[in-house]
Image (cartoon, rainbow, N blue to C red; front, top):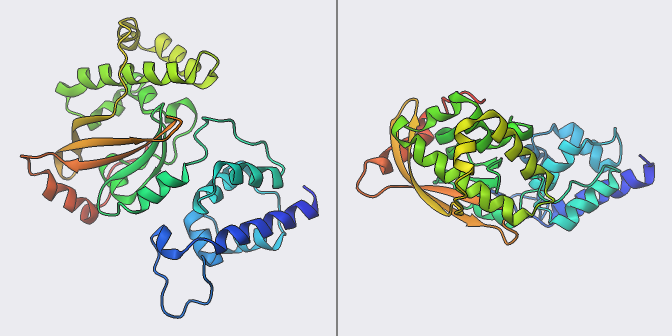
Length: 282
């Protein structure tokens, strides 16, 4: 990577950092703050990298950042897709293809940050988790370490028995039908040339007789909302309404979970922040 490009990358990061107000990302500004935007240590915290490493990036020093680092920086700095692509160009890394799920829509992140008391997460149309707030981690488990096609909950639902432990057995058939119908809608919207959806479907058809049977029925329905019973290891069964907000291109969804009326789920959801997450990530 050229030295000039590296200095341009550092300058670009500084300008993007300066424009973000702390309260926009859930941080307290404080009375003695010396900078209008975020501090370097705050960006490092949001991105999950060390302060020293981020300081080197802004100084135009150090090694070439990886694609994974660039993706988390784009998310932390609320970059638009054009700005994200520019960041990858400066780092001389290949720009992620559309629909790969690397870049979270800034509007989705903004809304997610405004839901601190509600379990919420952003997923792709193939049910791959992109980012979760702490209450979503407590309710559903930490899904940040999942990679490849296995990151899709649909993939794990049909190919890994353990994935179904989150729902009562009586609800499994409904969840299977709903997931398959939603996947058919997503695959159709992406088009026949989309490799990501095609390979996921092919692997499911080969590995799951249940999926193959449901897929042959040709049911199609975007999963815009649902009522779910989620089994938490400490709190037991929590009945919630799962609501969706879909991005303009249909590739990303903000999900948030509210207590179902007529149940004691409101109190149980309040306890999530106390017990935290006791689930083990896959």
